[in-house]
Length: 231
Length: 87
Image 1 (cartoon, each protein chain N blue to C red):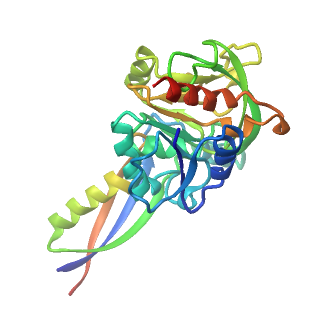
Image 2: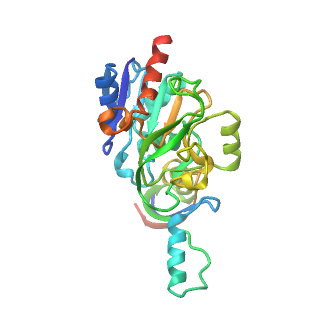
Image 3: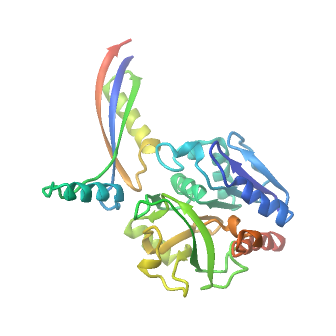
C-alpha cells in the first residue's frame, strides 16, 4: 500500500503517521510537500494534524487551496482512500470533501486528553478490524473540534450512516457529559457518502504503539492495509 | 482602474454556538452591565483591490468572501466598499 502524508508549513503530526505506516506496518510511505501536484501513485493519502499555514483565518481554510490538496481531491473523486486527522479533518470539511465544519470547543478550552469513542460501523475499509459498537480509547488534542452542521445535513449523515466515531462514556453511552467539545450528535469522525474519505478529530496514530499507552488506533491503519490486500 | 478599500465583516451564523461571545457576555453581566443580553464575536478584514468599477469590485469581493474569507457553512459576511484613488 503506497502511503502519502501531506506536509504543510505547520503540520506536526505528520511523522507520527509515518512512524505507524512505515515503521510499524512496513508500508512504503512518502512525505508529500504541500506544493506537489501529482499524487497518482498513492493508495492512501493522509492529511495529518497540526496547524497548517498557522491556522490563520480559520483552521484548514488556507490549506484547502494548496496544490497537494487539489491533487488529493482528484484522488478522492477517483475513489482512493483519504484520511484526515484533526487539522486534516478541518481541511477536508473546508474543502467540502466532508460536510459540516469544526468550530471552537463548547467550553473554549484546548483539550488534550484520552477519551472513549464508539466505533459506529465496521463495514468500511477504515474499521473492518473493529466491531460495530466497540468502545475504544484515543487521544484528542484540539481547540476547535466541535462538529457543526445544519439540521438537514445531520439528518442526511445519520440516514446514510456516515458517522464513523462518536464520543461516549467509558460504558459506551452517548451522554452530554461524555461529549468533550460540544459536537452535534457526539460526532468525532465521519466519512463521505462513498465511504472513501474519512475525517476524525481523535488521533489514531498516537495510539498505535504500546509504548505510548494504548494501541486502539492501530486497527484503523491495519484495516486499511487489509482492504488494500483484498482489493 | 480604480483602487478600492473594502471593510469586510465575517460573523458566525445565528445557529452556530459562539462560546467566546457567551464568555464575554457573562463577564459583562458580572461587571454589572445587566442590560447586555447577547454578544457575538466576528472578524474584521481590510482588503485593498483594483477594479474597473464598483460593480466589478463587489463581484470580486463576493467571490473572495465565498471562497476563502468566510466559510458559508458556519459564517455570513457583509462588506463596505470605498473608492480611495484613481490609478
